[in-house]
Image (tube, rainbow, N blue to C red; front, top):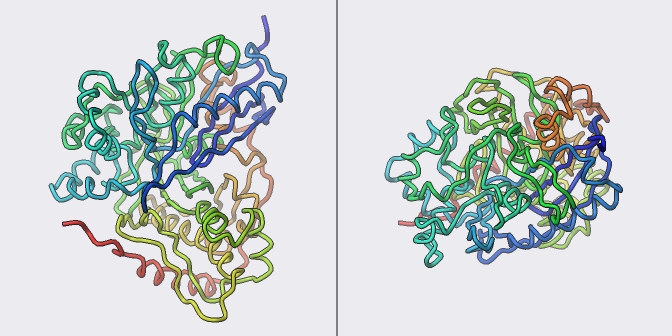
Length: 508
């Protein structure tokens, strides 16, 4: 019998899909990445093609297995991690989506959210789910599809249309799709739908009634690491053999687990398309009066979960993409480090990239992006610098809210994600926060977290404690700014935030 050496992860993110295989030491054995198309049908609308995502998933899996010369018999289990909140409704008989995936950044559900708020339901929903009623979450996106795509509501009521975030979509296809694919999600992804009660860890009928969503279209909620297994990959699937699929984490929770922030009071910040800081609060559900989200961190047993406070920022790495793709003032994200270092400051400007409104801790769906403080002195280089600063200042806002809600004063912040390769950005982050910023040896911790969940379910790793031995430090950045510099910079940022507020008029 072939020895089980590895755990695999499918990491389906906002801009692309990665397959990674890890050994028992948490080291990368092989990895392949492919980008997918971003679709913008109208201002504020963001979509993905679900079939393209599945095609790219199959492609990166096959390429990773070939690159690492890995046989399916060597893999103990597969975990999935994903862009959260992105919503798909499809036909379970054919696998064909009824509409494109509506991406987490999309603002088309503003009116649906406003009606729920105006009807007085937000306090009840926030108490049960830990989330405000905003365009970010899946529930209103499902309602939009049911209300706007002809025939889908009737199909959903008849069991001919099912819903899933991207994790559910990927797991369904990985375990056979129309041929018996598992229609499941985990506690972390379910906690991002605006439909799951944090205490019961189940779908909430009162909220489903408010949003007019048929319960039968929803997936079964399972632990993030599931010893009972979600299902198996078929022999003719992209992995080339029967492997248990048994791990599932939303991408930010994946990074928390990958960073082994498994003790109460430990936090991490992930720099991707958006920026997401999570603070482990253990078995305690901590409500946030300061604009953070109360969410599930992970669950390894049925009916039990570890919780977290989260600060979600919609646009960070996406602002760099905007400089590259829309303004065409940079050719690659990697350029920003040298450009920013060369100029050294933002020339007095602030850039607030509220393209999808403001997320934590402000939650203003009617805000839009601004650049303020412009003079003739300002150059392209200053705008690049201001874009990096915007990532750091948004993170500072979240960190201050976390301190208020939890009483935890962080001395160090663990960081991960693509942007942490930028040493200038990480030093700037340390300076603006006034805390040490610690970069681990494995930067793609999101996929590692999903692999850990799969490996724990199948015995590749014995316990959560075993994972901590795999975590190592690559570099620590220490703050160099004075308190006066820090306060002056943040004061200007807060003035800039006020200029973004309420830009879009509310519909009557």
